[in-house]
Image 1 (cartoon, rainbow, N blue to C red):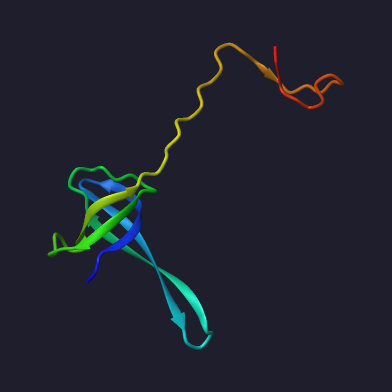
Image 2 (image 1 turned 180 degrees about the vertical axis):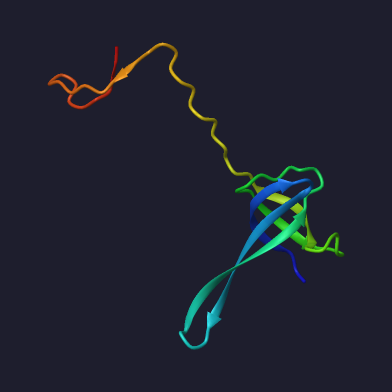
Length: 107
């Protein structure tokens, strides 16, 4: 088998990830290209993968009942933005007067 590229769906296991791999094939009856998704379990030795990352997988010997792939490379990391911190003591009011015209004003 050849290496495949997919997106990490889950990393809730130790040293294992679930990767979704999309593939296109031509449907002969409808004469259209159809997308199918396969989910593979892969070995991630250093627990570096997070959900949303694009990774490259290579086949290997069976490591467990469902795990036959190894993460070779992380092609693109998913950007995780931290949640906004609450304002310390400032209240934001949503008043509408003629001077603000629907803008949020801090008081």
